Length: 314
Image 1 (tube, rainbow, N blue to C red):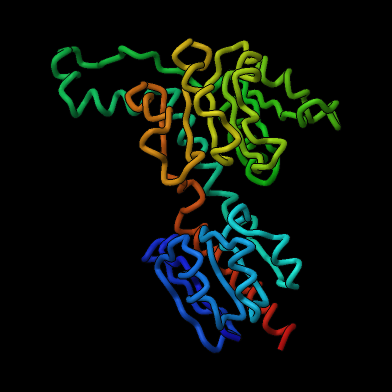
Image 2 (image 1 turned 60 degrees about the horizontal axis):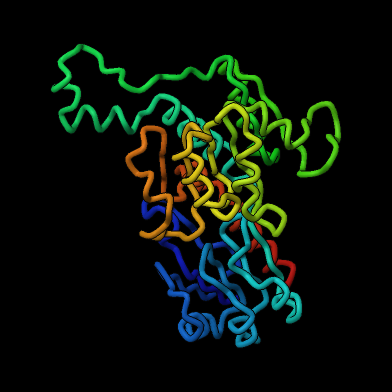
């Protein structure tokens, strides 16, 4: 079968991505603009499209009668019109479970970095503030331990479970949030509002859906009684950015660390940009998923899925 990979540059250049078995004609592009004419031209003869973030709208799908499979090189499929694919009998597959080490470790990196004001102290060393202060140690921002803190986890899939495991190793108490408005399904879960009220740190790992869009907003932040640190490694749209900015300025949140944003790359006029120099704000460019091992694991799963599809449709 013929296949096209529309955005290879969403992977690191030094990570080898072997051609999946069964592909006879393979075209790889480093990047493809979200331009219907360009996408259609590059995909016109393809049986299989592989992409991470290129937007495949109903308009695009409708102009690709040969297409049999869309293989998303990620877990989220927000960039794909799945209804249009179903209408044309096009198989859609994503990849799950590849970042079960990378994202949890990134989450803890953000957590430790914000609790220890790492960005602030890094700047203090390189911009001369430490030298100007003159003391052997600079501690103008409090350094907070994780041990003894309560971590609230919103989204308890594979990643949330691993975060809980690591957090307990640090001596943290872990509360797992039930869905909004629902009674806890078991003793392992805690009512959503109760988690908000008791967490010193909140981490987000839930998918973006109509139910979770702006799940964290002015109203939910108002229920956070302990002025927590908020960490988002889910999707940017789960958080109302302006609400977070307002809460930090009002002292309702200790800080905010995020790997995801409502627009990616992050817009220069995103209200979160106004927090750039805050001592407990950390931003990373949606790369929590992307350790070298995670990228290789993702591609291994993807290649197996594509090859199995080809074998079953030969």
